[in-house]
Amino acid sequence: MSEPVTALGGVASDAGIAAIAEAPLQGMITLRGDLSASAVKKAAKAASGVDLPGAGMAHMDGESGLCWMSPDELLVLCPYAEAAERLERLQTALAKTHALAVNVSDARASFTVSGPRAREVMGKLCPVDLAPDRFTPGIFRRTRMAQVPAAFWMDDTERFRIVCFRSQAQYVFDLLTVAAQPGSEVFCY
Amino acid sequence: MLILTCPVCGVTAEETEFHGGGEAHLTRHGPGSSDDDFEDYLFMRENPRGVHFERWRHVYGCGKWFHAARCTTTLEVFGTYPAQTTEPPKDLQKTISKKRPGWTWRDLA
Image 1 (cartoon, one colour):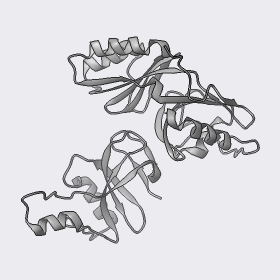
Image 2 (cartoon, helix red, strand yellow; image 1 turned 120 degrees about the vertical axis):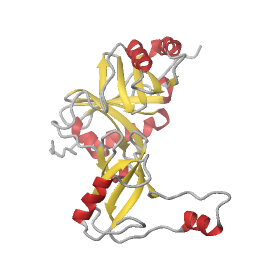
Image 3 (tube, one colour; image 1 turned 90 degrees about the horizontal axis):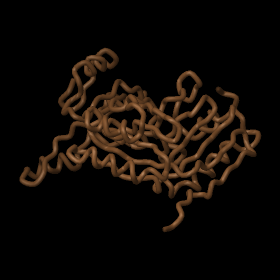
Image 4 (cartoon, chains in turn brown, green; image 1 turned 180 degrees about the horizontal axis):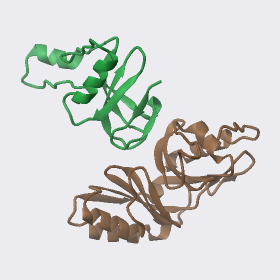
């Protein structure tokens, strides 16, 4: 069997105003269905080990978590090696429910941006209010990052986790390194 | 620049996170309709100076369609409302009447 690798081989850059790194492989399962249905809620909780987040929020527990993508879509995060097994359990649990679960781990790339200026780097690229009192850990936001779609949340007040499409990984990494280039502080947050 | 609030996911963002979908509340005339109705449906659009109703999609966010009422001269957004309706909500129409007395748009006033 082939060995799974990340899109950019774990590339990192900390020469600029924030440290940017490609995150290790992350298990991701897209779950679509009626999020108010008890079968879907129960299955999502069982697959991720965390409670269902409210609209626009994410619940994280280490490598596992649940992200609210839209009124009928959740992103289930789990350790990469467990994705197939968790997907199977999800599909078994939802066999009699109108729902869809797909393993999308290899369709995505993820990055971390960390440091006291991480908000500025993200603020340069996304049309999102990132003021410290408006965007806090726990919030999950799907948005536009320059020219491509991306989603992100904060692990703590100085660290962003970004998820984008794998085919756009190089573009996103380049964007982040340019936005974080030395001397480009804005001091707006 | 327009600042829109998606009524589906509640996110407020500027227009580049969304995608315009043209005029709202069109009545579809398909096969079997008269040539005049079909022509109106395909080609005839409002181009108002002032109050306008449009369809928008939260393309970089939740991906859902919704409606927006806005002013084409000032870019003021009067409100957004769900896609599953054939006319703007009455309270939104009242809000617009307060801000733009005497407004008209197709059959609405």
